[in-house]
Length: 260
Image 1 (tube, helix red, strand yellow):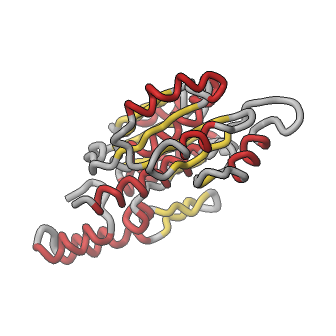
Image 2 (tube, helix red, strand yellow):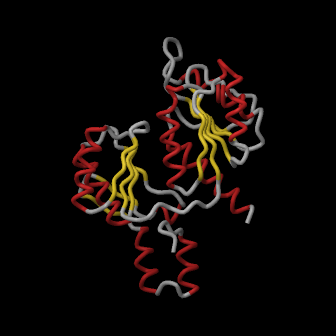
Image 3 (cartoon, rainbow, N blue to C red):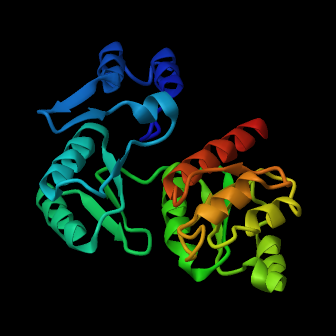
């Protein structure tokens, strides 16, 4: 059975006799909340209910609390993804992972960590294209990439192809002709998602990035520009790489299921 079973997968497995009633019952307990004292209430059934993993925001958490949350999720669900994790904290988590006997990979560009004791999900066929306007936008794009891949998508990426040198965009789009959905990350004036949406026939998700300075800096101008786009795009919050990656993966999965 899929290492990330949805509730539908679980019921089909029971119906076909691949798992017993008691095994199904045990899996359904994943809908329960795991309490860590007064620190956290961990949702261990999100993947089963929603088709996406529980992702922990590392930023602002006490390192010891973060480690305990990650350990609990890996023990209960087999995997934990943590975002906005510093290199120092990731090193501590990797030591704990080695002691516990599970893998722990830190992606420095995204400041994201994937701790796991189960195989990576198999590709379901959905394809996500990720584009950034500039090199400064890569950190957010990489967060989106990791989430989309952990949800079973193939990801094709092209970075630093912004509107200031629009000729750079066309070779990138040519590479992504198979994409079911596009994520476009841009800071400053945030033009690129609107441009891309005017050139492709698939959904485009705009991600404003907190680059830029002065009046309406830190992603505010980019957010406003995307919200006012005359092209048809969806827009997530500033620097919301996780949200963009998860939303794109849901779209890509739906597109692939529609092709079955």
